[in-house]
Image (tube, rainbow, N blue to C red):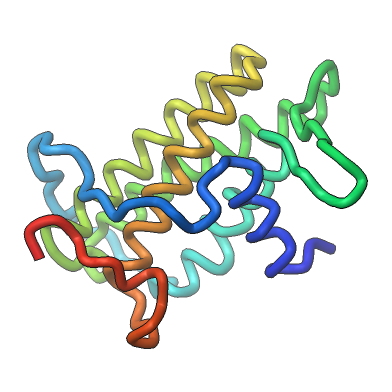
Length: 172
């Protein structure tokens, strides 16, 4: 079982961000439109808890490096077919989760839609990397997804005034 705090710290160390990511808005591409007509069964919080977070954690578990008291540990799958399959499946869930977040009942505003699209795009890059069994590209894709998550959470999850998530966004 992965303990949440050590997993988060390891993830930050693995992708070299350590909480110092500048809060950047997603790309200036056209804003995706809200997907209407489908019934949602899970709240956004439950989509995060049961769908997106487990997939992202599993993907990140198999990418990058972790530095601890024992030294540097490479987390890339290497020749392990099962680990690459885990990464591919997780990447597909991350990609499709972007669409889940754009559905009516979950979508919030234009910035939210851009973050959701950035998540889907990051998931697509992660899928390509996993299919190609390219550890460096998987690391880059995982970093892109992490940055999107970090910035979106900084914008939409209520935090204490002194939280690192409350860095001002450009234009705010």
